[in-house]
Length: 278
Image (cartoon, rainbow, N blue to C red):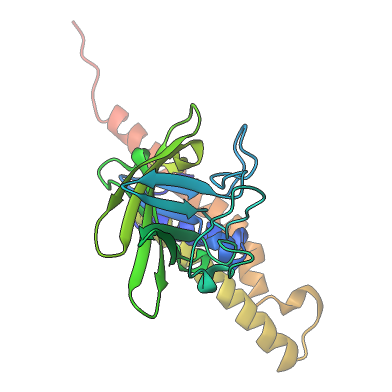
């Protein structure tokens, strides 16, 4: 069965209900409907060669630019088994003993000869959106943020679709006083097209679903009434049982009657012409 238009939105809702995920994992799932196609981005789903999806297997990504260093992780908090951040003021991201392990994005800037750290993102604040709505195949933007005492900061990571492997992160940019952006190419940035629609049922499918739902509600309400109010048991609990059991015979009779009329009309047309002798 093929869906189109607004029906695809209900497909997305149904997929979410049928495949529930924990709140943190849900931040890494994004679905986008465009041109009768449902694009499904599941950034933390395993892909060939990358069992953790877009997450760095080192526990973090690192990008450097303009005397600024940023560590970040997508879809989870950072873990440092080696090369941990060594900077001042890491109280809101793990403290001095576990700096970087209490957030998802951390920036270090050199001020007065010291590297001063600022939290710029938490996993719980992650938001995903499409990069180019006119070309959803490009990938998605993952944005995370942090509301600090002094200023609000954020990091936007453009996850570009690249089925050949991982490249980056690179091209660190600063777009505000404490807003940063970088680019990462990864196979997880490639969407899975769940449904493709050409000429679907459209309004007829919606009408049919409504009729079936109403019919089911009628049977259920009638059965409950007959069971509790009338004390009916067994197959007789079905409302108007005689009508439903006789329905096939009635349909057969109507079909035979219509067929008989059609044949009679055709024979009448054939016998209305007199033979012509040449």
